[in-house]
Each structure stands twice: as C-alpha cells, then as structure tokens.
Amino acid sequence: DTEVTQTPKHLVMGMTNKKSLKCEQHMGHRAMYWYKQKAKKPPELMFVYSYEKLSINESVPSRFSPECPNSSLLNLHLHALQPEDSALYLCASRAIKRHATNEKLFFGSGTQLSVL
Amino acid sequence: DAKTTQPNSMESNEEEPVHLPCNHSTISGTDYIHWYRQLPSQGPEYVIHGLTSNVNNRMASLAIAEDRKSSTLILHRATLRDAAVYYCILASGNTGKLIFGQGTTLQVKP
Image (cartoon, rainbow over all chains, first blue to last red):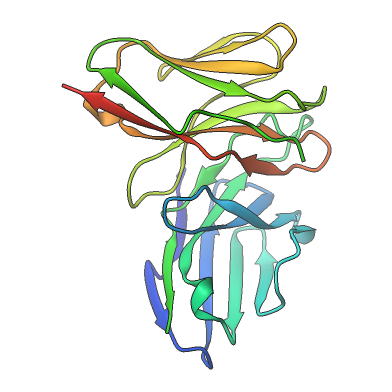
C-alpha cells in the first residue's frame, strides 16, 4: 500500500464552523506534512511532524491546529477560518532514515476547501 | 531556506526529449534536489531526486551541475501524459523541509 488517503475530498464551511481534515498512510512513514495550495500556485509548507511530534510550524495562524494522534494518522483542525483560507490542502508522508531528505514524499490527492 | 528558480513555462513536441532547468545558487551541502510533477486536480507526484551525481530512473534523468548550483530534469521522450507542472525542490538536510519553487508548466504538443 503506497497511498496517502485524504478525507474529505471536498469541504465547504462557514467562517464560524469547526471542521477537521484527515490524512492516513500505512507505509510506516514517521514524517508527515501539511501543505496549502492556492490555485495556480505551488504548495506552501504549513506543518511537519516527525515521530508524531510537531517539528516545523511555518508561522501558520492558530485557526489551523494540527494533530498527529498516531504514526498513521494526521489531522488538521479548522476553526474560524477566513474566505482567503480557501485552498487545496495536501498531506504528504515520507520515511525517516539516516539521511532524512534522501527519501521521497508521497502526496495525497488533497482536500479542496471552500470557506464562505 | 534555499530557493529554486525555474522558467514559468516550456513547450515540447511529443516523442522529443525535454530539458527542464532549475537554478539553486544558495543550495547547501546537505540539501537534496528533488523533482515532483503535478497533474490537474491531483497531488504532486515524485519524479526523481539526487545529491551530487546524475541519476536515472524509469521516468526521467537528473543532471546535476558540478557546483550543484543548477540541475536539469530530462524527459527522454515526452508524451501527452507528461504535460504537467514540474517542481524543482531543495530538501533541507538539516530541517527536513521540502520547499517548492514556482514550477514550470510543460505543454506537450502532438
């Protein structure tokens, strides 16, 4: 199984809603990533988890709250979002070995989020 | 974070080779060079990566300059299915970050 599965595929939410995005992988990868991608732009790194601990937060607003409850699962909790947060949210994972970045990223297909 | 620079777009004819360039003049000694591509409505897909030596796999080849300040992704025979946005990325050996460049949109003409 070499898949990263993201749910839901599409999400529409109001600015007062609370919702969560889910990402799952069963490749034994111990590094997991959240990226945000606006239309016709490259993905922007948001968070990195290594061994289920948050290792990188790219100064993301607190209305985005990541969680890594176990080695296979990564969540992104959303609260009080703004319309400009509408984007494709991508999850990725990779193995952690001796040379950390000598391992490729596996991406999910993303969750297309619309904030009204 | 080290950055990459790529042309915004390139065109190729089907079944001809394509050379996609990337400049990364601020690369550090522990940064790996990764290439990914993204088709519409999909997540990025791994293509190839390397550190210092040229690399080949079933999808493509990666040629890395001796000073590592630039690299070229080579698709040996472009097909219509290779039309995508190609991203050159420096993967930080210190932080584990993979920061995307702006990408090159490749069009393949039949």
